[in-house]
Length: 367
Image (cartoon, one colour):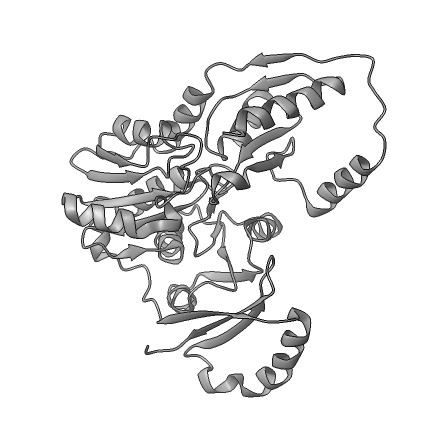
């Protein structure tokens, strides 16, 4: 419900500084870099709570190249805002940019022109968010029979018990409705998780594995895949057996994207379902990733997938008084004792980026 207020404030700030603003309406986050490229904009701004509750609504910036602004650029902007900003004698204009929804849908249709979904019964959970119109529409245009949940946003119910952060809702609904499979997007549409016909959850690691093998077979992978330190060990095993190079980054889509740009690769992502296909757009795109999954399956059953074998994984959040002290305490013994699971699993200890927590993740051949 704060979206219109933030949009108005941003528009006022840009026009006061002499810039022109075009309002694109409600669209998934990845539509921003697509529209920047199509129209040659200098900046793209997305007002979004992402995968969080409505009261976390905020702002994402994309530069003229379609990539999110760097940490350095964001820090420079914050520094400028701390001081007085000189007024600009020339005031810009605010106008509506019509046809943005069709621009985005057309880009998806063009990318997946060879994908025929006739005969597929799919359930989509749109998280009461930005995919609530375009998600079901593109699946229908490609021939699928579509059932939806989470398509009635009221300004406060975004991500509330629905979407990729509450995947159990989708999994239960897929089984109850007898659907072939289901996809759950997050509020701003840059993530996706899936559930097969049995209700088993298919996370980002498995979706990336399927996409990697598919894109490599089509000679569109570019060499390897970028994932984060949280990616399941089974993914690394599968890629090693398939002779696909893997590079590992810190947690966060911007680090995955930086690795893809550096190496010139096409595919990367996170276990959370944030999947980037540089062949389409330099951002996570939940709808495109769902369609890429179906393209990789080539009419097959998601329940019979063979992308990777997941290792049992357990994550425990430990509340601590001081993250730095806690991390220093574990680093020395970890270096000496990691060999017990060498080649079969691992123990990963990392500090939370936002809370006084240390996250301990363990993977092993058995639960």
